[in-house]
Image 1 (cartoon, rainbow, N blue to C red):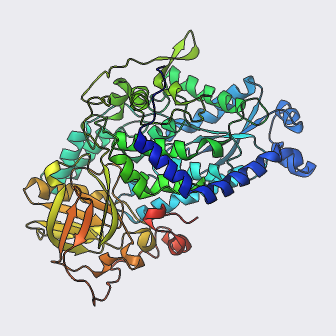
Image 2 (image 1 turned 90 degrees about the vertical axis):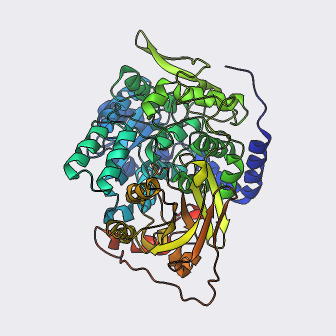
Image 3 (image 1 turned 180 degrees about the horizontal axis):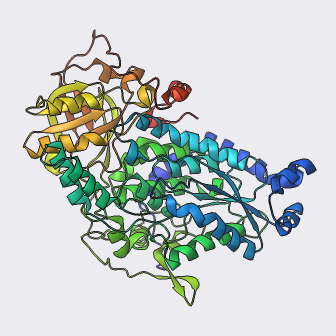
Length: 603
């Protein structure tokens, strides 16, 4: 471990503003979890019938232990299902965790499962309109799992897009408990992301058929484990580690290895030692403070991570009483350099990142530059310097060793003295069309400014049809509106990437402006996303017409229409998202959801 480095002045200033802005809400949150902690192990206050129900299925030893007041009991909440490759390895985790916790003198119970849908499957389908709302459903399901007053700590088993944010938001409602996240790791590298993207473009142009496309996709997504590109799922894993909620080095260790199995057992023991019944009480609600939130934003920027986290991190912070804003992302992005090249902002995948030094090298570099707060609480039992180290097994015993200070592959991972770019790749846009987010880490600098006539669509299917019909000629800004959370649940529009990429490769200047989302895998086409206010909530996008001159300027941070929109009647959605594929069950959520800038949540 290296000596302490002074925190960068911008990181300090953003953190201070965040503390000041959040004083009222954070104080209220901390008062709530302090009151809950002061009640002691909640199950001791249960009536005998209540407690008997709570351990009826346990073995005799666990029943005896839970009848007293000194044996900690951990909840296991899991998103396991065997349809999602990333979650399939979680099937046997509860048994492993229970065994390790029992050996350490505690009890662990499987408290509940949460839904886990896959954006990769629902892309372009009606089910995608449930995706963002599934985050808040998962948060509620997590709360249900922890609501029985039986637990002294919790382990969250989840990996992908909305699942990890949902689990964390739900767990923060029980912030008096110590909590850790238990990842599964990425699948082995298959067909490269670059080759996969090329086949997708060829399919969009009609150069290959469905059979060839399916072969390529199956070669890329081919086994248990997380998809290997650096999208939202792998951004989740990175964030949980830099926030101290994973064991050091756990994020990208592959499934099924002895080290992975040792980490899974160890995390249960660590949380057991952090309950209020021990000497190292570390409640989640105090661990996730303003410093931890700023660390998360910094690491997201330094890795060119998923733009979806401009929603999720805002919602997570609010669950802890912290008022994170897009302006905080913008301020930090100006001083946080880009240290990784992973697809879509490079050709490497997360396995190559891990092999080059991975999270230990990344965190060490950011700490040395003063860009991360070291003095945070972590599941490792100390500050963030513990995360400079890499796990290994010595005669079956898990330990952590120092990581080489030099990257193993500077085409994938670098230090702050020689970054890939001087800023973090996520920028905020603002103008008379509203506020938006743009991810520029994968966009060529000459495409950071696009000024062209608008082509307006009320859904991605209409744009895809216009492409297929050969109507998208010349330079244009594709405006895809009524895709915000209130309109239809804010689906990802990743299916538009191949078509727009084809047009861009033909020499046309194109850009996307939308109140919807792009995937964590959004790439080389400039895209102003999460436009707020959305069209369905009275935003200016509802007033745009074909031919209106639109200027997207990622250099100056502006998003403008160069026309007078006054006096125009607002358009109405051209597609019905009120029913089908379960969407009718989410009507109340669409009516209650907040704006993208506030995290697009219902709480």
